[in-house]
Structure formats: C-alpha cells, structure tokens
Length: 397
Image (cartoon, rainbow, N blue to C red; front, side, top):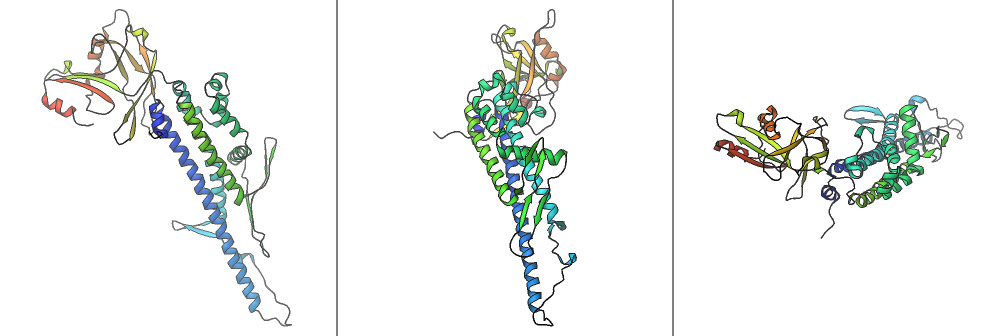
C-alpha cells in the first residue's frame, strides 16, 4: 500500500485544518522564488542594456576622426545614460524601483513562510490546545515548543525550531525584514563598470540589535537563502509527519453530526430539527468541551471541510434514541471566512427544575427555522407526513 499523502495523513489524525496552512506555506515560498527569478531577470536586463550602451560608445569612438590622428574624445552626459525601465501592463517602471521592491518582497515572503509553518504546528501538533491564530508566529511557537510540556511531547519539532532559529540565513532574513519594516531600507547597490567587467549588485551592510550583517552579493545570496528556505520546509514536513501520528491533543473532536427532524402538515409547533451527537450516561461523564469541524472524504480522494454553523448541539441518550440528556453550546463565534477550523462548544447540564432537554429542543425557536438536506457531513433522520418534504430533503444541499 502506498504512503498516504500529507493531506490524507492530517485528515486521518483529526488535524485536517492544518492542511490549509501547509498549502499557504508552499504558495508563500513559491512567491519568494518568483521574486528571486524576477530580480535575476531585471539585473540581466540592466547588464544587457549597459553592454549595448558601452558598445555604442565604442562605435562612436571608432568612427570618430581625430585631428592629430591619435586622440579621440567622448563626452558622456547624465542624459546619455541608459534609463533602465520596463513596461508592466502598459505602465513604465524604473528597474531600480522594481529591484528594491522585489528584494524586500523576497525576504518578507521567505520570513512569512516560517510564520506559516508555525500555524501548521499550532493546528497539527497543539490541536485542541492550539493558541489563537493571531497570536502565532515563528518566535512565539519557538518559545512554546521550548516549554517543558511541549518539548517532551514534540521533541523532533522542537529540535527543528532550535536549528532554524540559530541558522545564519534565518537570522539574516529576520533582521532584514525587521529593519526594512520598522526602521529604514537596506538599499541595494547596483554599479555597472564603465571599463572592464566589474558589475556589482550588492545588498548594503546593516547593523541591528548589536549585530553586524555584512554586505551580500545579491546574485549569489538570494539563491543561498532560497535554498535554505526550501530545504527547511522539506525537513519541516518530514518532522511534521512523525509528530502528527502521535495524536497527542485530539480528544473531543467531531467531524460528523446527527440530525433528527420531523415536519407535520399544518402543525408548525410540532415541526422542528435537532442536531445532536451520541452521548453517554450520566451526561456529566461527557467532556466539558468538544470541538467540531465538518469533514467528508469522497470516493475520488477529495477531502472537503466546512465550518460548523450549528450553535447548539444536543447529547443523545444512548438508552432512548432521540431523547436528549444535555447539550453543548458554541463558545466560538462563526463568521464568514475561507479559513476552516474546529469550533469549540461547552457542555450545558440540565438545571434542576428546568424543562426536560428534549422539550427544550422542541421549543427552541432556532430548531424551527432550518430543515436539513442530504449531505456528507450529517446523518439525517427525517419523519413527516409530507411526501414532498421527504423528497426534498433527499436532494443534496
């Protein structure tokens, strides 16, 4: 049997929401590669234009007739220098501007890739203990993994972070991005030789947090940095595979839900739908918190995820089908977002003297608003004396 894809591995180990961050990391690194290739092409264009300009000067000298037969003169004005421009979607842009922009973009996307990988770790390793997305970046995750609990749980991932954090390439990337984002540019120096072939494209040296970062030849250093980022990601994926299969923090996760719905003609008060999960008695033996992300795997291998929009999930009595012991109420908001994630629910136990949970489910006005169609995320039982209703609910949503 062939090894499962990383996407399938994450799905099988109840951390599928990490996949979106893997994809985003790959996309981010690809964008950095595009910037690198564009920089190389722009420098090549400058060199080509400069070479053509130098050849034209040489021709002018060769064609010039000197008065004494020995001396030729050539006057070069600033207006005679090559302009080095390129057209983008019909707009002219200075190549010097594009070099500066793409250089900063290259290092920023390279740095972003490590933040994206940290989102993968947050979702795939920390799982049900994951921190808020907005709080996570490489530095924060590095600190988390060096805590005693997580270093014990994920030693290989901790080791990867420690190696990356102390590598010269990452230190330079991090310093460059912080310097250009918060302080001042690290200018790119482009010099074309008037005589000879001493063309130079150099990132100027800079000083940050008591550390000197030396000048770097952009033609070779970008390739070095990109190779470092690409290799780091490959190694990261290998480590991720070893850590995910431990299934460390994935208790209380649900990927499918059940539905009981009934619709009685001309009796709206007795027509309702209830979303539930199977429970255990007593209800206090159920987890205080659960997490829900709706997932489905199709025959073709396609995996689809949907955020749960259900605000209340009831707990089914195992001894009496469709009689409910308690309920879970969402404690996370559910907004419109392309990101998928596990929504958290908190258990609410029946209060003394309150209506039975089954009666609460029947009377809840929210349960009278929606009837569910057949879909891969729910196991639906429909009861009705309305044949058209039953037929409609069999149609995919």
